Length: 355
Image (cartoon, rainbow, N blue to C red):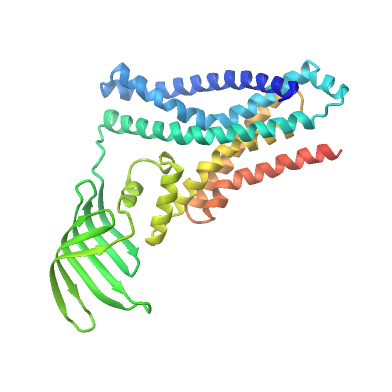
């Protein structure tokens, strides 16, 4: 790494750390004021409150780092301009392109680190804080992993389950319709009880009915192989938001639920958002560089930077909302803000570079 890059890195780490600390403290104070009454009424001890906010820290960092990274770059460039460091660089035949390339490459590295950080600590933090808030504060105990009135498709079968408890491995009121290629029903299988195994359902007192020959056959015990993991449906119905699950878990859910014929728009949108949201850090870097090519005043830069952050998140929220409703594709909805603002930032940078 060159001397210039080391200097830029050291300065940016300082500004980003100061902003991140300040932003995190403000976020925690606002959240503490809003939740303290409920925590006191629920009788939470000091250790439980500390645990809640300790696990909230990774979420705060994951959510605020893209905007804070942008503000850090804007302040750093404005300070360098005020102290004539950029003029000194230009007099030494070092164009603005060199630090710009460094910041983009640096942002890509931080983006990758943010994805790993969010998956390792952010997911855990979301799950723990939700558990503390729901069980200890709101006194809503986590329900057993149960299912009610579930329909899904598995190979030649259309299956309906009235009730099932995944933890106990038992279920009630099973019905399966075996279909042929033209869509005709070959047989109907019913059972009042069944046991849940990893890749198999064991029916008790099953009845097999052939609607064409009107024959009825009873089986004391009958096995039906299933490719769908019923735990996928419990994850979908849980109180946790989809962002609280890892990329691997969401990808598995999308695959299994799509095969079962279920609607996967919301889960697919959450899956793409797990990458699109951290990538906002790279987009914010491009916007910071583009904005600095037009304005050099530090106060104007910070103000306009905050305005851009507001508009970015507005477009992001609308894109995700439309994708979850199926109005646009999940990928496009999650990446709309990145594509739009990234294009504007690159357009401005290339325009200035050509001039």
